[in-house]
Length: 111
Image 1: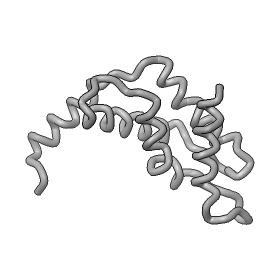
Image 2: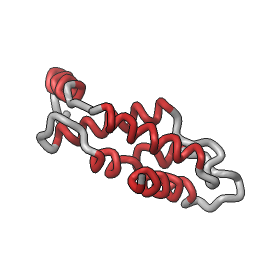
Image 3: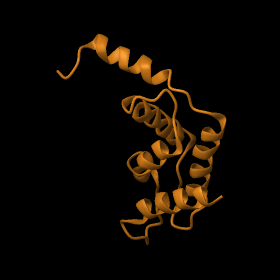
């Protein structure tokens, strides 16, 4: 085992205390919306996917010693958290979900 159950629970509590500002929450919602509006996504990222992205971003911030999430946390984790949740049209290339997430991140950052 890499940690005890008590250590795991402590890590979960620490992560839950990491602050995510309203603006950051809006950023996550914007990324999700951009995946749903993308032409290469038959089904985009759901609100549940957004919760996963936020949780992963909080964990990344905690691992880096911060008590708050920054957009770079979201950006760094968007591909691994969201890409497998994107359903492309049957005619799309296998790389389409990764492209959808990359485009969504680029689009939302440009605003």
